[in-house]
Amino acid sequence: MTIRRPSASRTTRLLAATVVLGGLLVGTATPALAAAPERTGPRAAAPAESPATVTVTGSGRASAAPDLAILSVGVEGTGGTAKEAMAAQSTAAEALLGVLRKQGIAERDVRTDSLSLYPVYTQNTAGENKVTAYQAGQSFSVKVRDIDRTGQVIGAVNDATKDAGRINGVVFDVADPSALRAKAREAAYQDAYDKAAQHARLSGHRLGRLVSLSEGESVRPGPGAAPGVSAAESSVPLAPGEIEEQVTVSAVFELL
Image: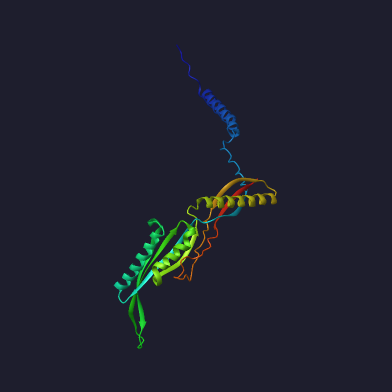
């Protein structure tokens, strides 16, 4: 058998045809690749517009007749030595506590607020200050739960302690202020709501939901002094008046 080998010129023509065909295939594929769409991530949503708001402050008050009196009373004693001064004030304090028990004041309603002892100085002819005596004192807080007897208790304290006794002041209050504070809080919130509703109407909006609410400190009555009480008085007239609770709130509402 005779095997014929391709000639060199034929081999060259076949290689050239292969190169041309490959170029055509590559040229055809390139536009398709160029036309492929570019992949992109999801677009971020536009931020929602924050609603308009209105901030208001409301105040509310509530009052009630007091049912409790808190007395600030004390005793003082003077002596040539510190021991003598403390003994004098102890005698006066025992008299004070004894008369309070006779007036029906419970032990839990009597509290020592302070106890003091200090020297008394006197200036001599040479201009020198020297200790000539000592003064001791003790103050108490006394709760009188039957306020109609407050004046009677003060008179009894004066009678028992004489010149050693001191009436520093009296405060009228309510034993349980929670109910009074709740009424003042309701009034404060209603005041804030009414103000917010008016602002919404004036600005052409509708009042929306409550966004935030905060409450300030409530205001309580201050002490009422009873100065110049004479030891000869068996009963002291007093005017309890009314106890007032004040509450403030700050509220933020949406405007629609």
